[in-house]
Image 1 (cartoon, rainbow over the protein chains, first blue to last red):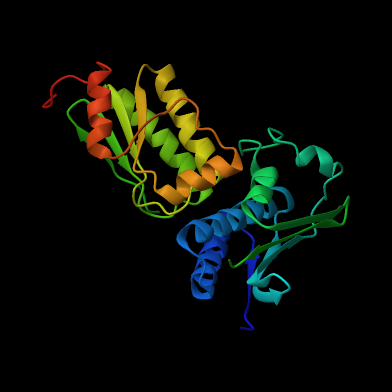
Image 2: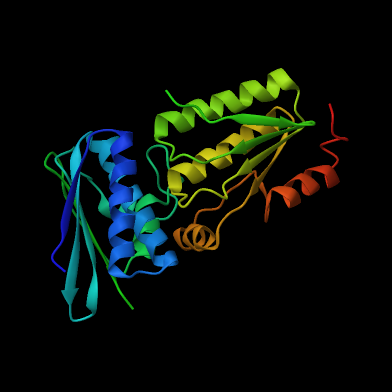
Length: 133
Length: 124
């Protein structure tokens, strides 16, 4: 399945839009309800981070296939201020704003693959993958 | 803008989350609930999420904060109707909803409040 959906994130309404897109695709690809919820929650966290910290950005959701079979890849990208200390934001309990400090480390635990790249003054890209079992 | 209705049943306020709340709506709702608690002299708050298919860290924080704020005003809160996959997700993320009691459904939530002595007989 070659399907790519891009949602641009500019407001908190777009966060809802991105997770609707994510749930729809997860359902379509055959993920069970628990995985649909994991994926949708992860997308919610990443989209909200964009809107809260960078203001604007985009979330690209696509169906992928690899050695681990079929799955879903989500890339959340912004040109915001970037993260000076990634290790710190990946710690449980760390929060600079309105979450419970579980946003990024929590997201990582919901998915199979998690990668974060950030450059201060340039932006942040988070890529997550969930494989169909 | 759309608002989420807050129902009063006896001494209890019941908030049923049905629409997908964006962040501003959630903040406004939090204020609305606290005002309503004050105005109605409610003695218990039930937050029903049985129609909700996702609770992320923001929503979790809102629910937890609201319960703590309500408690500061003297009102206990019960979260009811958490679906299995939401319970799984919250646990895996490491989100702990502090300050809020939980019950399986609305009926059991009302029972719990009653047993806590927070709510008297209906009709108030």
